[in-house]
Every structure is written in C-alpha cells, then in structure tokens.
Image (cartoon, rainbow, N blue to C red; front, side, top):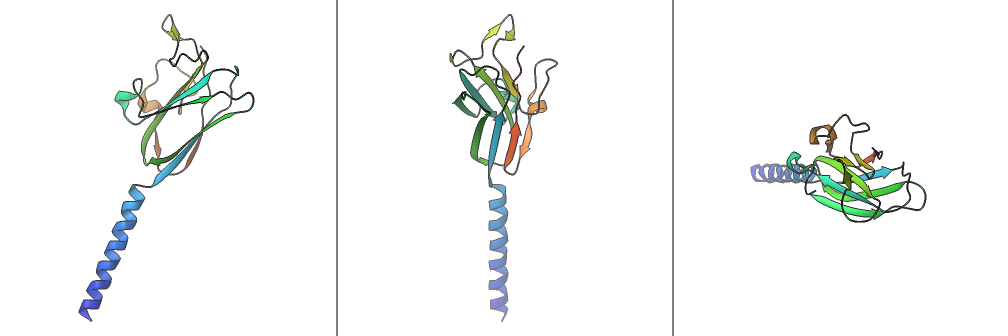
Length: 144
C-alpha cells in the first residue's frame, strides 16, 4: 500500500511539474492592427523588442508587410513566449528599408505599442507590455 501511495504521489508531482513548465513556456499570439493608413504605398516594418537596450536598435523579431490597397493592416506573430515586449513600426514609403529622417525628425509615419502621442523620444518602459496570453493591439501611425 505504501508503494502505491508513493507511486501516486510521484505521478501527481510529475503532472503538476509538467503543467507548471508548460504554463511558463506557453506560446502566445500577438495580433497588431494598423488602421489609420493615409498613404496606400510602401511597406510597414515591424520590430518586436524584449530589452530596453534594443528598443531603438536591432529588434529581436523583424518583419515587413506590404501596405494593403484598402482596409486595415493586420500583422500576427504566433508562438511568442510569455514575457515583456515593445512594438515599434514605421511605414517605409519609399521601400529603402530604413526610417527616413530629415532635420532630426522622421519623415515617414511611425508608431509604438501603448503610445498614441509623443512628447519626445519614446522609451522601452513607455511602450512595453506583458505578453502572457493571446493579445490584440491597435497601433496608430504618427506623422510629424
């Protein structure tokens, strides 16, 4: 009987450990909608960043999506591990694969997660959010 109880306890512990490990590594889906496209040309370049040091540098995940002829642009990232993320994007109007800047100001529309109006350069902390479930997010483009 003691052996049976120990075996049952070991099995229960293994099941609980496996469930906890799966919860920590759960894959999440992030869906971003960009709905205020005033110019129907170019490419939306999106970067997902997980560290403050990379916020204005190399993104952890980069993608580019052609601007649709009409309607909103929807971008989905699947199988993202839970964690802290920030999204930055810009509309590359001339498809030169970079944000064009003139006089220190962007000349192409851009946006960030959680930021709708800028009062100076954004920070990772301002734009970051916790991803621990499937999430839908709207990002408005900003033009200066």
